[in-house]
Length: 335
Ligand code: SAM
Ligand code: DTB
Ligand code: SF4
Image (cartoon, rainbow, N blue to C red; front, top):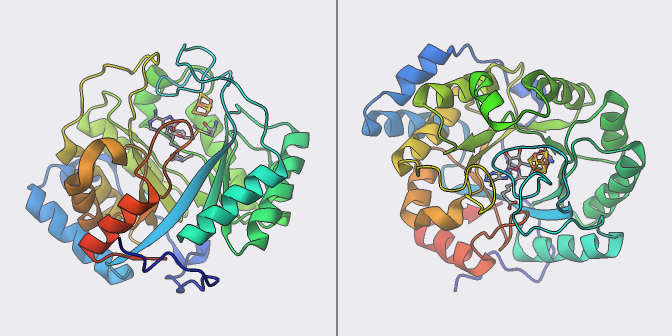
C-alpha cells in the first residue's frame, strides 16, 4: 500500500493555483460551441483538455474532499435521482442532525487520511435559520482542524450565506444538476431559477462556489452541453465543479435507466475542463461503479479532485486504501 499521504504529522498543504473569484472569468460558451467540443473525435478532445489542464494546474496533483452526511433522508424535494427524497422508497431512514462530536471525529479522520476539504451534506430543501446556526458551529470545528470547509444544505438565503461566511465557510455546493430544458424531467418541487438565486447569494457572501451536475440521467449530448454551458456562463464560473455520474439507487425513478456510454462521461469532464480552465473539476459520484480505467481517463480529461472516503452521502465510494493504491499506480499526488 502506498502510505505517502497517510501521515502522522499535521499536513501542510501545497498552495494550489489562485481560487479567488477575481482569478476566474466568465467564458463565452454557447450550447452549440460545447456540442461542437463534445462532437470532436475522442483523441482530439482529450488532447485539448489535457493542454488546457497543463496550462493551469500541475497535471499530477489531485485535491481530496471527504463527504459526511450530517442530516440524512426525509427530504421533501422530489429529485428523481436521490435516495434521500421522501417521495421514494429506497430504504434510507430519515435521521437527526449529527452532533458536534460525531462531526469532529469524522473531520479528524478525514484529515488524518489526507483529505484537504471536508464537505457536510444535509437532506434539506432549505435550512431553517436555527439549522444554519448549528452548521456554522460545525464549520468552525472543521476549520479548527486545518481543513477547508464546504457544505451543501439546499437553498440558501442571503443572510444565511453571510452567517456561514462569518463562520469561515470556504465553499458552498449547490448543483445545477442538468440543462435547463431537462430540469423539469428530474425535479418538480423547485426550479432552475431557485438554484441560480442560491448560487448568487453564495457568491455575494464571498464564499467559493461549488456547482456541477449529474450525467447519465437519460439526457442527450446536447443537454450535457447545456449543463456545461450554464456552468461556464456563470459570472464568474464556479471555483469547483463536481461532475457526478448517476448512482442508480433502487426505488428512485431513475433506477434501471439505460446506462451511459462511459466515453460520454469522460467527454463531459473534458468539456468542463476546457470551458472552465481554472476550476477544480471533481470526478464525483459514481467512481465505484465506473472502474479504475475510466477514472484514469477522467483524470486525463482534466478532473483533478475526487470525493475521498468509503461513503458519499448514502451510497458507497472506493475506500481510502484503494484510492491510495490508484494514486500510486497513476503517480498522482494528493493535496
Ligand atoms: N439537499 C441538498 C441539495 O440538493 O442541494 C444537498 C444534498 S444533495 C444530495 C447534493 C447533490 O448530490 C445533488 O445536487 C446531486 O447532484 C447529487 N446526488 C444526489 N443523489 C445522487 C445520485 N444518486 N447520483 C449522483 N449524484 C447524486
Ligand atoms: C456532489 O456534487 N456530489 C455529492 C456532493 N456534491 C454532496 C453527493 C453525491 C451523492 C450520491 C448519492 C448518495 O450517496 O446519496
Ligand atoms: Fe433533497 Fe438534495 Fe436529495 Fe433533492 S438532492 S431530494 S434536495 S437531498
